[in-house]
Each structure stands twice: as C-alpha cells, then as structure tokens.
Amino acid sequence: MSGINKVILVGHLGKDPEVRHLEGNVTVASFPLATSETYNKDGRKIEQTEWHNIVMWRGLADVASKYLQKGKLVYIEGKLRTRSFEDKEGHKKYTTEIVAENFTMLGRKSDFENGHSETNAATPAKTEEEQPMNYSQTTGAGAGDDLPF
Image (tube, rainbow, N blue to C red):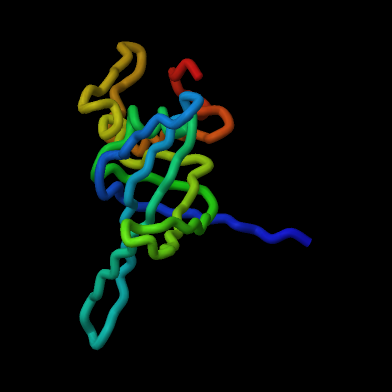
C-alpha cells in the first residue's frame, strides 16, 4: 500500500517569487507563504501565523513569476518534501518545502490584472467579485485562461 502526501494551503505571499533558471532551461520559483489561524486564549483572540516555503517548477513557475506578487492571496495544492544540504560550515541541515502542483489565485479579478480591469460592453463589469484563476503543473494554465501554454 502506498501513502498519500497532500498539502492544501490558503495564504498570502510573504514576498515576490524568487525565480531561477537551472540547467536545461528549467525554471524554479520559490517564495514564503503565510497562513494564519485565530483562536481564543483566556478570553483574548490570538492570531498565529505559520510560514511555509513554496517551490514551483517549470511551467507553473513561469506562471507564478508572471502573476504572483507579495501580499497576493493564493490557494495551493502540493506535497511535502524534505531535503538536506550543507551550510557554509559544512554542517548538514534539513528543510521542508511544499512542492506546488497547482494553485488558484484568490481575490478580486482586478487584484491579478496588474490593477487594470477589463470590461466587455455586452457584459456588466464585475471586477469586485471573486474570480479565481487556476493553474496546474501539468497544463501550466487552467480553464478559462488566455495563456498560450
């Protein structure tokens, strides 16, 4: 029997994606994502924020570098990956990352159109409604997108 490694997060980007191009023109994007939860302790509301290291590869990384920015709200599905590396002093360190398989941009449509809202004369403008945009590792873009890949 095989196991399941599935992570679902909804949070805000802590900074713009850092994009690198590796051998073979492979793109990788990484950024911190903040998730928050609120609970009551002794009658006071306490907000606890967790930071997650997100990694996106290839076409998904290309889309992320184009559309994601610090502060944007995003839904991410992926898997946990722990890897090891050596620090400058030669000590072995471990880090756990979320390797994203797809993401959905949340918020108003105008939030991810670089501040420009598009309207169609035949359709009333609905820029303030929730307009999720879906992107997947396998396709690079989701249904309803105008992206060429």
